[in-house]
Length: 85
Image 1 (tube, rainbow, N blue to C red):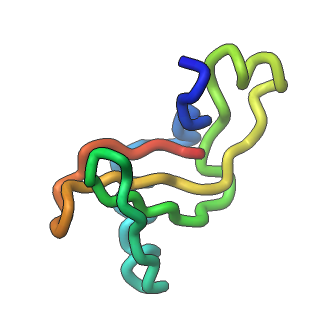
Image 2: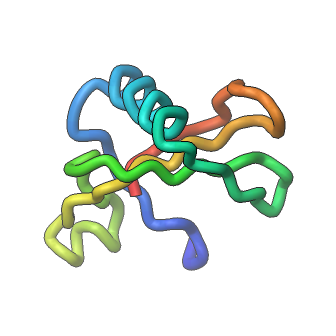
């Protein structure tokens, strides 16, 4: 998928990290952007969130990713997906 967002694998427990990132988003007032399908995207700074995966990551020696993207259904906290980016 050549237009896929660069993302990776979590460095630690994914559920704990997403919960921590959600807390950071709320505490710092991060507001979401609206994705093409209407879902809300929160990009939360999170040092050493994970490593870039896939072929692109492997080709670049799996660089460290320093944010977590949390995608929710519009207007609520129902998480669709989350990943380091």
